[in-house]
Image (cartoon, rainbow, N blue to C red; front, side, top):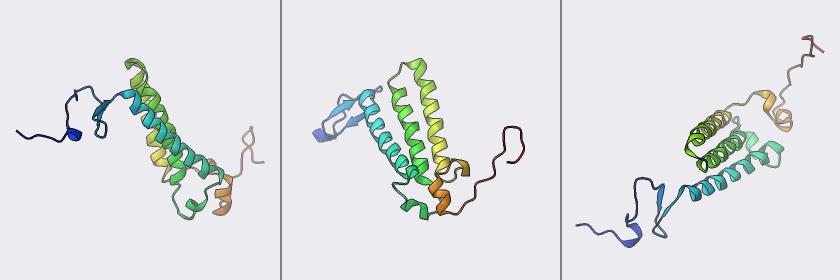
Length: 140
């Protein structure tokens, strides 16, 4: 019989386990997985806020808006992390909502409507903003 080294042992792993932490040999629960997802989500949100506010502008040399999409994906991952902590009935709905936001973020990495782009980005790309209609439908 094949003997695995102690660090790679699968002893204590059961079908409901999320994953095996190979360094400590323990099985991680959903709560710590939610914390890890939330941490990554907060980092992604931080990148998105830095990109949208103009603190990080180097990305604007490309034609894609991937940092803005990363921020939106971070919001979706944060919703997923919160959903993992809820009871089963509400968990499915919140996880679905979070995954939908992650999908929108993935799309936003490629294209965002001009109206949602930051002002400094539109100025750098020399984009004109479309004229706005007044509340009665006429041009102002």
